[in-house]
Length: 102
Image (cartoon, rainbow, N blue to C red; front, side, top):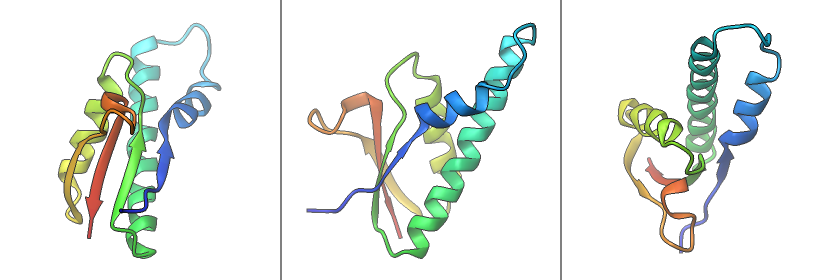
């Protein structure tokens, strides 16, 4: 059974959006949050690869599916990601992406 390492994007997005001004453009804030999430994912994958991890679980939540799409688009662009899929029913289902790296 593979050992999983988790990255919680909800917390990253909360922290990234917490400094935003209340009168700012909500779409600009969302783009900034997604950019932060992509950067955090890149760091997480690089660290995981460097530590010899072969499988990671990325918990992005269900929500509207926008963050899930951002995560999966970013995974497609990473050369060391060999595959990814939705988490199983006991892993979090569509709120989780399980990625194999190597």
